[in-house]
Each structure stands twice: as structure tokens, then as C-alpha cells.
Image (cartoon, rainbow, N blue to C red; front, side):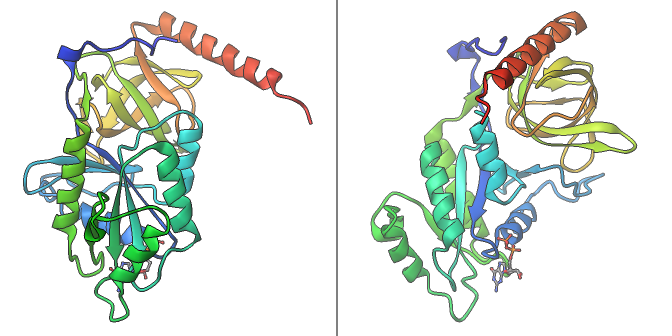
Length: 297
Ligand code: GDP
């Protein structure tokens, strides 16, 4: 493949963190994603209509940019990881303070540990009378998650997605964790990106939201995504605005695909259409080899 080359150290520039929110059903993942989206200081700029493209970016009051995967649930995370696409830098584990550690909480803890991704615990619903955040912290100990309030090193923040309490603290925690990770990518090269979600739109044809992992994706770029090739006809950001290019950790909707790719597929920009066909052909061959090599039960 063409994706094995390594960028020289001096080409690497800081990039925003990519954050996934996980937790048990009804503990407030969707509410928290919406509340965090509402903190974006660039909201309200011309043309800023919220689009659900599977990921969004916010700018905090302090000027930091954070990318959130807007696909709550563990399927996206595990499915992408199973396919070798580890796009998440930080996991926010949401636990409802009036509930406790539930099966999907434990599952999220296990997935996060297996992925080796740092975790921030958001203890949600602290507005409720029945909220007992200390009980959550104690329960987390049983899973070897020692939060700061228990003298450990996992950051924990009390929040209420509903009443918008603790959101700035949570954003600070994300930025602090991101700083520790020293996230970098080379923006000055042809892009690689990972498909977050994809669909067939009746009017526009195949659409994919991708997260640029390095380089800058531009209108007109020829690419291979999975086993399909294409040329970027248009790029839209999470506010539905047409943009000319997208840099590292920026989620962007791509038009101009030859078919609908799968979540976790890698999009690679190549020099020209001939090269695109070669790479697509090579990937198809590889995929077929894998399929025929699979044991028949
Ligand atoms: P998800 O299944 O994890 O995405 O959870 P949702 O975001 O859909 O929230 C589940 C329920 O909890 C909804 O009825 C929300 O209104 C409610 N909820 C979410 N966050 C809070 C909160 O901070 N406080 C209270 N009181 N309710 C909340």
C-alpha cells in the first residue's frame, strides 16, 4: 500500500484531539454531545446550520479546537478498531450519577483499556437529587479506574448535560489530556483520512464523512477509499458550509466517491486516476484473497 511512509519530525504540527463519548444507554451521551456542541464559540457565524455528519468540531473560549465523534454507541468505536482504524485519542466515559456502573459502562471501560486510549470520566446528571458521584468513584475503583478525586490519575468531572453544569471543566480536562498526548500530524502533504460514516444520498450520490488523519484534503484531489476510487467534487464541514480543504483531525463530508465505503475504510489521495485505479485494484485483490482464505465452516 502507499500509506506506510513516515512523515519527518520537522513536518509535524500540533493537531486537535479526537474525542469519543461512551457509556451506558440513557446515561446522557447524546445530551452531552449536544451540550458540548453548544459551547462552540464559532456557532452563529454566517451559514452555521448544524449538520449531523458523524463528527463535529468546536472551538473553546480559550481558542482550542476539539473534534468529537458524534456517533454515540460502541459499535462505531469497536467496528473501526476491529478494522485497524484507531481514530480516537481520548474517550469520555459518561456515567449517570443517579445510576451506577452498568453493563455498557463496563464494556466501554474494557474497550478503552484494550485500545490503550486515555479516559476522562464525566459523572453526569449531578443536577438530580439522587445523584451520588462518590458512589460512582468507588465503583470505578473496582475496575482499576482511580480518578483524581480518589488520588488517582484519571480525570473526573461532575457534569449536568441537561443544566449545562461543568462543561467548561470537561473541556479543560480534554485539553489538558490532549496536551499530555502531544498530538501532531503533517498538514503539508496529500491527505490520508478515515471514513467515520457513509451513505448513499438520493440526490448527491455516495457521501462519506471522513476524518483527515494527516495532510490536507482538497477539492479536486483524486483518491482511493477502501476499494473504490473517486475525485473530491465538494467538501462540506459540520455546519454544512462548502469548504476548499480540510486539515488533520477535521471531519468533512466528501462528495465524488465511486461507491459507498465502510466505516473504518482509509481514504488515500493519489497522484492521478491511473494510480487510483491501480491502488483500488490492488486493494480489491487483497480483499478477495482474504475472503477466499477464510475457512469455510
Ligand atoms: P444516551 O442514551 O446515553 O445518549 O442518553 P441521552 O442523552 O439520550 O439521555 C437519556 C435521558 O437522560 C434523556 O431523557 C435525557 O434528557 C436525560 N439526561 C441526560 N443528561 C441529563 C442530565 O444531566 N440531567 C438530567 N436530569 N437528565 C439528563
